[in-house]
Image (cartoon, rainbow, N blue to C red):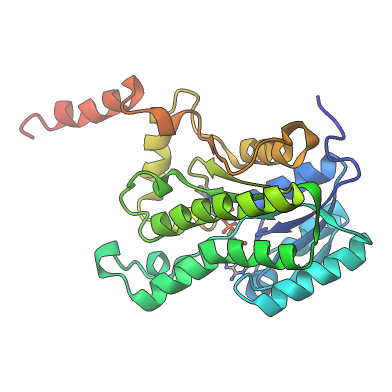
Length: 278
Ligand code: NAI
């Protein structure tokens, strides 16, 4: 058992809505590894969710911030540096929302007003966070910033809708800002591409349960869960990964490298046995 990997480190965790949230698991593990945390979420999520319980468990303060508001982000980073009495060592961006997905509007019929909101909340918010931190020089040298993403950035997965476009932009921002932040301040910026995971955001995707099953059958190691994702994030926040930056790291049991697996084809063939005419 590895202990104290984040001893003395301080971080901001965006996106813990409830105990299913991936950010929740990251916060719990970061705390267990010795980190001090500030937790943040949109005002409505703080009201509707259970972030207060996580704050109590981890001895953290909660600061409300809409990740699409430069003003909120400026206040969040300034206030966090006051609380920590210094700079921040790591940041987790665990934020996603698509009004098109939420309203069940198919991709080919996307409302552009909705699509702009998807991109702003799910991708540009990462640029906004990085820009705010960069301007305030809020992140320590060799600090680490992570955003969570999905393989729909590279491959088309039916039903993932405009979130695929948002994830492609998110991963591109990690590379573009990662270059600047690495060169100027030795700060790492990476994305972790996670298996489908049963959370509030995940379950909003059309046909989510089938996607989870398909993905599990396709992955030689099976799906990665939120706890597995948190382990990867802790490693990336730690000093053991100081030269990893501008990368998209697949935490998906091997799914992204697969074309077809025996377990998946077996299930697929069942439909022919059950419906021989088709
Ligand atoms: P979640 O629903 O628990 O977390 C999403 C968070 O985004 C919520 O806490 C929500 O309040 C926050 N958020 C939405 N709008 C915001 C705004 N304007 N300002 C600040 N925060 C805002 O779901 P989950 O699954 O933990 O999502 C976290 C991240 O992981 C997202 O980026 C998601 O796309 C990504 N991801 C999730 C997968 C899944 O299957 N659950 C798979 C791969 C990536």
